[in-house]
Length: 239
Image (cartoon, rainbow, N blue to C red; front, side, top):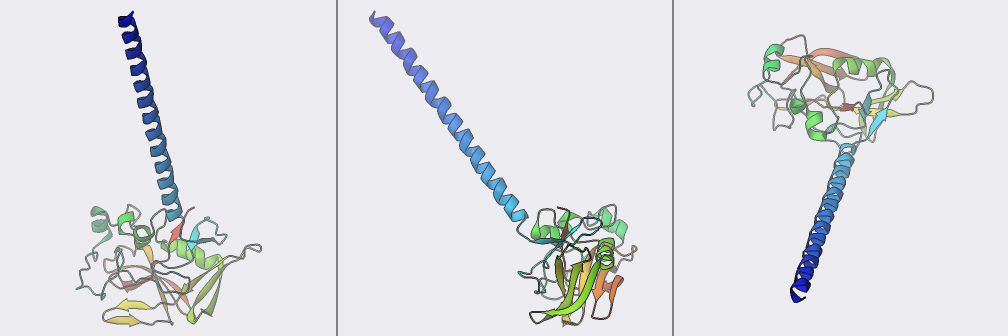
């Protein structure tokens, strides 16, 4: 009888132990799931941190309300050489710039994709903002020009264009400040001209990539400025 009681107690103790272990495992799995869910929510919030506007464009593309490096629409933001993701002390061929090569060479080293557009790791919009943000292409800037109303104005002391939807019931707009261009040894044309990088190269011409340039009288796309020059980046996304 004593032996039977010992066996019974042993079985019950082991059952309690296994039950406790199972409960501990389930608790840990549950907590891990919660942590992962919270982490995913944080990543999602970070991805959507930057505000965008739906301007009613045919493509459905969304445009950010400010430049990379800015904290509000009228700030100029950062100045980036084409294909680089960080600002520099000065902008010149001699300051470490290395992407003055043909489109085929850029493709070989993964700076551009097969369409001639910047890859994620060489896109200042993608690398600084994350998520689905990227630098717009020449054709996407052209869509913005053709399908929006452009009004030269001054926002909180900063010259630039207010770009508004043409749709009757769409009141959305974005402001593009005229931040000039950074070329060694200084920032020039500030408040007079805007220079914004496009994601694509310019007809395989190795010293240039496509730029969107504007002032109060004109808007121009094309082979305008050298790749090493520091220009603004206005992100877009297909949310």
